[in-house]
Image (cartoon, rainbow, N blue to C red; front, side, top):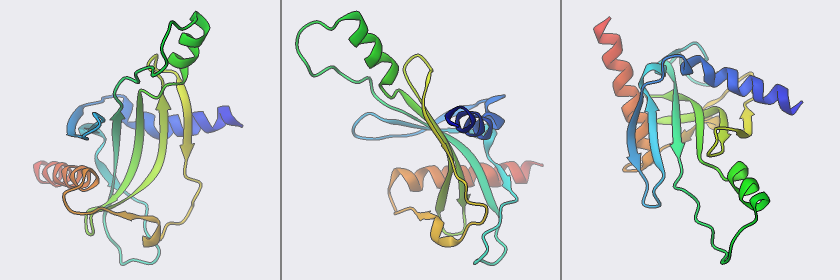
Length: 162
């Protein structure tokens, strides 16, 4: 079952993986880097049942975390080093459904990776129907709002150039 979950979540994110064009959007005070895959921004046919017909977009983002420093003193055994290397979160690829109308988003799927690009954890939404309550509204001057605004701006620019 876990393998199926990895395949489904990976498949949801792999749609944009063929021509990845990561663009750094922001960096948090803790050093986490937020990037947007410019080639993944596209219109979505997913509708929200309690809202007037609104155009939503899908986008892939990546959160890259700073290298975890080992807080314990002394030397680690090879086994401890390998376990830490395999389980420490390095980056997370996520697929978002964004409503540009109200600067909100819904996380559809994510895959967390170790420093060796091994899948640590994955998840995919199993909700067949979404409502506006499923979306997270971003606050002004936040990283979430910056990501939503950049994705919406890129989408509008791509629409105009067609």
